[in-house]
Length: 411
Length: 229
Image 1: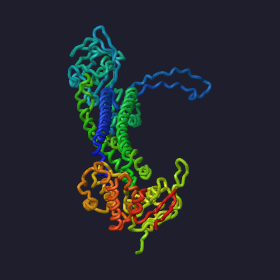
Image 2: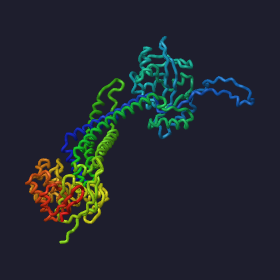
Image 3: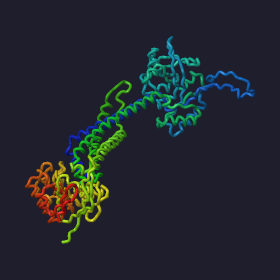
Image 4: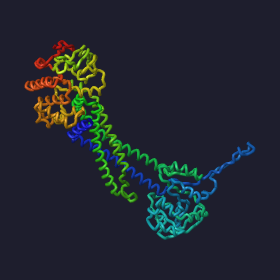
């Protein structure tokens, strides 16, 4: 019984090869573009996330500046006494208390993949009479490299030398240019608390951000502690990476409770970037769906046309015992055949385009197009393609099922 | 010989509403017997085709009641009616209405395949047998659209016969055939009624055709004016 419907559907398709091919081709293009756009968005997001994560941890744990509390007159015995206050940032040290234990506590959490202590210091770079302001990250060389892959941004010198050079410093290329500093030159650093330290330039890095290149440097944790005139227990930040960066906002809250300090997730720190990413995602989704819908309309149109040309045949089938449901089956089957052919070809075409794009060189920083074949996108593409063609077939088929044979025969 | 009633109508009436309310059939009651070659005759607009479509179970919008083999058909669901049609009724239409993309053989086989009571091989054998009876065996694999009018009408008859229905209904079966083909089709109907005991109900305005049948019910203005008994 089923096979009769399929046989009729196949005969319709085979006697209308050209229309079938045109409709399938529409789906092919639609699916291919859908998959390509979605693959591209994943690739771009992955690239830009990686770029962000080269300088920003998933979660940052630090001590927030506190505003000194005014003496409230409520707390005084005589309510009529007024206290003139002048609230400002308190002079308490930004040190995280007992950083070693804190770090171990954080590292023990199952979600945490990496945690690194940091000393962030505002400094001046001096070479002769020229001076530049900037910021220096005192880092634990191994842990910070695990987290930010600093080594991959190096354009001169060897990152690992920092391990064996206590007074070594790695400068952004912008600083080196401005101060005319070469590898193994010495540079004099003055900190915000007035400590002066002569440091040896052991390398240069180049990030994707010019401002960063013009101000940032890396040095050993101990060197930064000395610059701020602090002991080895002085740590201003702990940077934490977790398994799923998307969960960072929630996990930041958890870390705040765990440590008792302020936390900041990367999304909060890069709101503009997150918003841009969201808009990009919506834009791509709208475009890819629009194209899929156009393809679906192709199928809808062709089936609609087939059905209005075949009203007599439908009437005959109904007269000879076919149910409305059989008619729906026949035409939905035809749509699905077109959809399946189109979807499979679409996946192949998408794979081809993605492969082609991934070999296109677009720029120094990015290199090749940040795109690679994503199986999950292809699967959703297939699913979406079949779903859309099902409806594109079902809507006209339902109309066909309602054909009244008597009305046709009486004409 | 006791005549067995195969189809019966009781006070069937039908209205058309477009463009104005108009009674197309009025109080139609009659019986059709097994193995009978019955014609419904009348002028154009007498309601004979309307009546046939009610008898065929395809038109469900009418008053009164319809019985096939003593079972009440009126009020059954559309899907039930389609199943009853598939099993009990074969159709031959004025304009052939074969499926043009299919071979003649497939056209004949499709109703039987839909019914699903026999295997495809059995149906094919049966279809060949019918084609042989109608002298069309060599056309079997040609597409239906390539045949002449007379040949197409005979294929349509073969299709109507494939499920061995109890009743075969025809709407102007010879309406656009020449004299020779009309004769062939007519003889075929006679033969079917006589040899297989199948009932034939044919609508016609061809009086010669009607006269030569077993019985003619004549309609005029939606009423039966002669039962032909």
